[in-house]
Image 1: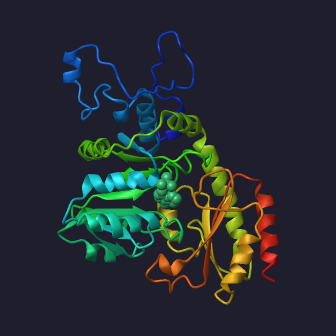
Image 2: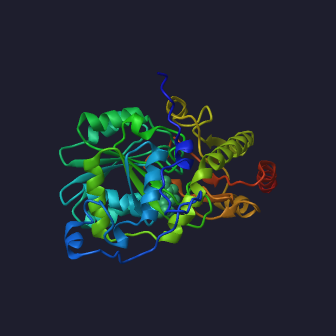
Length: 391
Ligand SMILES: Cc1ncc(COP(=O)(O)O)c(C=O)c1O
């Protein structure tokens, strides 16, 4: 029999959900509770939050959170999912689940900044050390893995420098030494790359971005295939006491069925605008993994079937910081602010030397664009008028 290709989107929409008797509707119900009532003492004693068989207390799951977790596992091709109140909270949950005093964690040098900050502060305070590896050199990762290494974080691409790593090589280097890998899969969103087929053990996702799509909800998730790993993450979740609000989950359940349409629209506009920026003399390099010449483009081409709506540009090093700031301030449709995946296009100038040890490969001023869902020609005209200010 022919193998049916992985189709998370139809699976998301036609997803098992048991509505209450005589209530047949497309959206799942929203259930809110702290207290869950037990019918008798025997059931109270028999049910434990640790097994997640049955409901015990709102913090440990409701029909609403369980439904979103099941759909996210479907989206990412995993078996289990645990929600967290933000993407950064999900990163913390993985760190707490897998690391203890004396352990070491390895992070890519271009990792999401607050994740690096967490390693330098909280994790260091708890006696957990870290090393930064060059994401563009799998041999560098292999060299750094030592007897205390318990976790390797991956990010593809780095969400500011947009360098796309040799994911297969990095995963191989970690698995050769028996160290689990956790991928920050926010950019791939379960749509651009098959994380578990590539061999990652944990897929962490900032649902704040594409799954929400509305720039209005903060949430994160951790998806696994392995039951034992899932159990460790579940224990960290329960013990940290980090629940998510049912109304936020409802918003996610509302947005999720349209994620593929939105993702591919962001992708198409971002590619057009990245090409446009590449034709400007003041732009020395465009950092978009789907564009030939961008760092790691060949790895992107070998691994991905799509790209998200993010790209960065390296502006001429001869420009002053004041000129770069004037270009960014001159944009009208692009708003100045953090995050991505929402309807509104965003822009942020980054201080690259504070984020990446070796900036010699990326000379100039880095400006990152998150492409929203506005008409792409209007966005291009906005870029053109702001570029004109640079003379
Ligand atoms: C790559 C990446 N990972 C994780 C996060 C954290 O997500 P949240 O903002 O939900 O904490 C972000 C947020 O910008 C991000 O860009």
